[in-house]
Length: 334
Image 1 (spheres, rainbow, N blue to C red):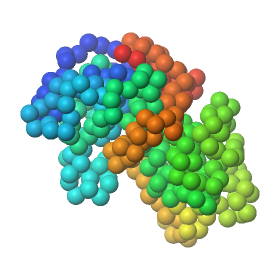
Image 2 (image 1 turned 90 degrees about the vertical axis):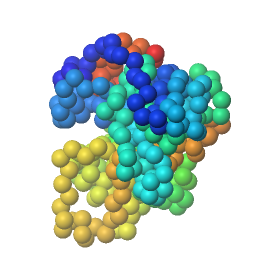
Image 3 (image 1 turned 180 degrees about the vertical axis):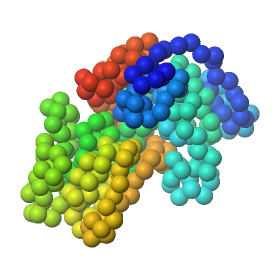
C-alpha cells in the first residue's frame, strides 16, 4: 500500500531464512482483512507498506533450529508470530508474546512468506487438505480465531444470550463461535440482508437492524430489560464499543476484538455498569489446534465468509469491493 487508497501488486525478492527459527511458506491462499481498510481509508499511517497477515500454505524451507515443522506440511499461522514458550504464551495470550512479531509488518498478501518462530506459530493439518477446505482453514488464521476469542472473552455458553455488534467477517464468525460454545440465544446486529442470512446460517436466533441507542433499546427489549449476558464487539469505533457496553446486563461480559480507533470509555458509566471487559488482539494460536480439527472434521464451515475470490494480481479491486461493502471478505488466490 503506497498510500491510502493506493494498493499495487509488485515484484519483490523472495524471502529467505534470517533466523534459525524461521520457516518459508509458499501460500496456497491469502485474503484481505477488515482491519486492512483502516490504512486504506487513511485512519492508519501507511507508506509503501507490505500488506496482509492471514495465510495458509505449504512449508518450503525451515531454519536449522526448527524441529516441529517440516517442508511439505500444510500449515496455518496466526497474524502474530509467537514462540509459544514464554510465560505470556503459556498463559494463552500468544498475541502478546514477549518475542511477538506482527505478520502484517512482513506482509502475507504474497506468494511466499517468511514466518518467524515457526515452531511456535505454525500448526500443521493432518494431511494436505482438499481444495474446498482451504478457505475455512484460511479463516482460522485470523477472523475465525478472533471471533472465537471474542466469544470466549464474552463467556458465551449454555444458558447465555449473546449479542454481536458488527456484521463483518469477525462478527459473523463470533456468531458461529457462540453457537459452537452452546449459547442459547444469539442476537446479530446487522443491516445487510446477505450478512443477516449468513448470521442465521451460522446460528443467530434474532436479527437487530437498529444501531446506537436504538440498537441498545432493542437488545433490552429482547432481554426483559436486562441486556445480554455476553456481547461481542467486532468493529472498534466509539459507537460500537458504547453500544456493546450498554447492551450488556450488570455482571455480564463484553469480548472486544475490533481494532480500537478513537475509543474512550467514560469512567463513571463504566464504573456503575458492573460489566466485565476483556479483549484485544486475539491469541489465535491458542485456538488453532481445536479450530483446525473442527474444520477438518467438517463440523464448521467458516470459509462461507469469503464472498468474493480474486487472483492476487487484482488485490486492489478486492480492497475497493470491501471498502464499498460489495464484499464481506475477499479471498486472494495464488
